Amino acid sequence: MASNLLKGTAILTIGLFLSKALGLLYVIPFYSIVGEKNLALYQYAYIPYNIALSIAISGAPLAISKFVSKYNALGDYATGRKLLRSSVSIMAVTGVLSFLALYFLAEPLAHLVIKDDEQIFTIEDIASVIRWVSYALLAVPIMSVMRGFLQGYQKFEPTSVSQLVEQIVRIAVVLIGAYVVVNVLGGSPKTAVKFAVFAAFIGALASMATLALYWRKYRTEMNILLANSPPAGELPVSTIYKEIVTYILPFVLVGVINPLYQFVDMITFNGTMASIGLAKVTDTYLTMLNFLTHKVVMIPVMVATGFSMALIPVMTNYYAKGDQKGITRSLDQTYQIMLFLTIPMVVGLMALSSETYQFLYEQNPIGAEVLRSYAPAAILFGMYTVTAAIMQGVDRHKWIVFTSLLGLLVKLILNVPLIKMFEVQGAIAATIIGYTVAVGVNIFVIKKELHYQSKLVVRRTILILFFNVIMLIAVLLTRAGLYAIHVPQGKLQALLYLMICSAVGVVVYGFLSVRSGLAQKILGDRITRITKKLGLGRS
Image (tube, rainbow, N blue to C red; front, side, top):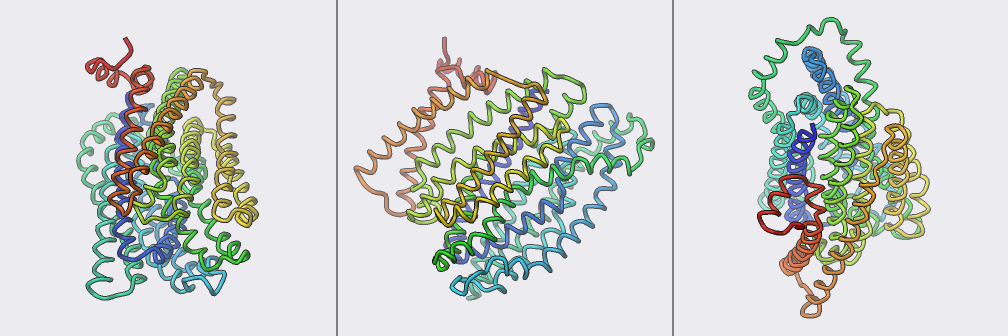
């Protein structure tokens, strides 16, 4: 089962990484087509859409994955199939209702954003892009059911590949459509942004087509298991959904919590900035926080997201069998790999924030400083995702609701006063404090409820931090040497400096990890075999 966790994590993480990387890289040409000012319009559409999407799918992929995995472990494959048939219809209706809700709430949401006449957009501008993005809600809920069902059978590839296809198609439509609107048809960048947000619907259709192909591929195998399963008739549909409903709220909160933090910024940032005389720059600063730097910060988080999606069915299986050792092994493995991979990525972002921002967007000291301050939040985002997934896997749903809402409440209370004191840095501080509270309580609950305490994880985390300090020193020295020769001008020079400094960091951190044996112990036998062949491991 540990191999299932690693395999599932690898598949989901690779797919998420490629998807997130594409989701970041397309911003470079899109930024050039529509300009920084109009990107604010783009992000105003996506934050309410992400919240509506999370509510629409009601945590369906993970909730269905958990339910199907639980009954599959008991040899009851018919109950999961029964759930699939009914949930497709239910999620189709949910999608329509969510679409209608977001479409007709577009103008009231726009009123929450526009707080001053000096802002660069009108209420109609924002309401219009929200309406255009809402069409994607018609397709995504059905797609989420199929992903969850296949994950319950430990089939992680369909989720990964369909996410990648969805992203590729969406980005192609965004870039081609925006270019044609602005440069061929002579339309305004605002019109291009409307077309770009509608691309989410087209991408969702492509993802559904991909999942349909995977369904055909696995159908025979799943039908054989179904034929040998006891009948599902003994378990009424109402009983199935009663169990599913107990999963839903925690899954919704985990999926929607990050967009909710962004939504708090969306409805409080502009008004607070206007109150201190900064209405002219508030849209630009909020775009830096909620879109431009957020996309970069979320890349390290994909490691944790991959783990959480693969961890839930595995943890549920161990929990259903009462295998305490299996639970402990999974927790140890998850914490260590997540921290081993996430922390150096965050440290690198902080050290190279100026070059990263310059390469992706433009040279901007304010944007670079926002990225540097925001980067540490990625570790907390990842820890929240993983700890919430652990509690979901062992039926500690009430605690997830409590800690999620507690952290969000802290963010809501602190946001306005901190923004007044520190502007955009205040919004970042409120987010970090809110997540710290939520993650801290989650870790406490896991230790208490699962009797989990691993000195091994603590020791290895200290070693990881020590190696990261050495890596940081090496990167900063390399950067200082490069700047002493020449200060980078333009995107290509920034990319060159970024690649050189990143390579130094990877080599230093990789050498220390392998030479000490840490990488082999955390990443497993395959790394051990490779290092022995290369003569890099400890003798």
